[in-house]
Image (cartoon, rainbow, N blue to C red; front, side, top):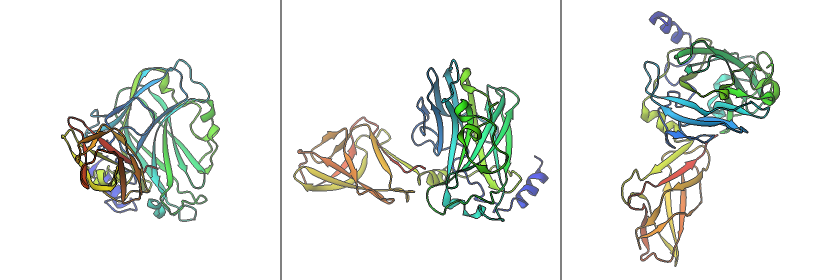
Length: 355
């Protein structure tokens, strides 16, 4: 795109020049949970899901990669390391992203003023062919299925897709999912067919993906994506690069990972003894979370009063602002203490409030 075309696109984008991208972490900079995983779900780049379900032989690694087009430092990489011998009807693989409903009210869905949006991204794949993109309205159970083609293997290509505003389906004003994006890498007969044109009622067997979608699971290979932007208007504008700090803060509404970072006896919280063998530790959230999160831990912890180690403890009084850790032990020697990582141990507390 020429400089003149970029300027014209920005002027005509119908949105502010900043904060126009509805996607958080579209440049795949933030990966709080980790940089590589062989599991299905949210395990690497924040806010993004790599899902593969019901497969028999398939083995997949998802990772935050440094293979990128010019102007980007990270991408989301999906690698098939063991191929599926045959794609069964119930087998499905996709990359997805969900947007909070209250962040979409300015789209005016459900009325005559519903606004078009444009999705743009950089993509690279070892497998050429047709890929489906499902735009799904979670509240109205409506969908609009589009597609893009990769024409050259192992080459970065820039794609844009414009989606008309939906005058029929309404997005609720709440903190649940409002729009979900699914980029299909493989879909069995239960999830592929002939999608309806434009917006309409969603049926999985027809509308999730096109029947001639590629089957990425049939071969060993790699798929990369980055620079994902969704914005109001019928013209893609240059990707809105935000600072790492801004992206991290936005991601922490949905996931917060507190880590000792390998520091011996790294402190997570201060607290005190409330009974002969029970101590409470209040842990404020870094920022207000979308909902009261679920919590998990990895590694080994200890209470510095008594220096006793713990591989598990419980959480209660969880809110969008804080949570409380409860440690039950008979070896605490004073009424106050700190919840710490054990020595030579990378310990984490993961709070999850994802859509």
